[in-house]
Image (cartoon, rainbow, N blue to C red; front, top):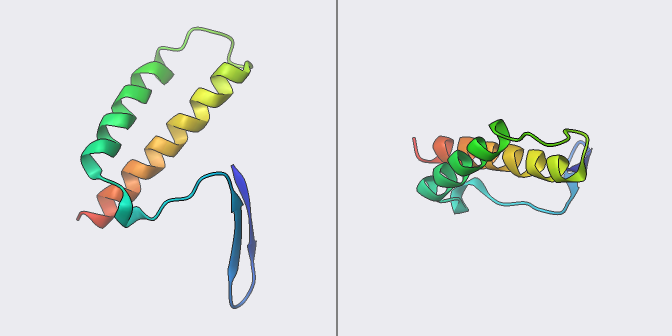
Length: 74
């Protein structure tokens, strides 16, 4: 989660986590995503809980990191 302010000549990002695609190891990203995919899809608790909210953020990050790593490693 975060915020972005886009101006004609620059962009300001406010976020807790940011990483360049070229710094992401494809194998590590794939492994992290696969582990989170199992946890996310197998979650049986309350989907309105902070536990699920955290898991969902981690899942989305891992999915985005994997996609970015794949694009860099084409």
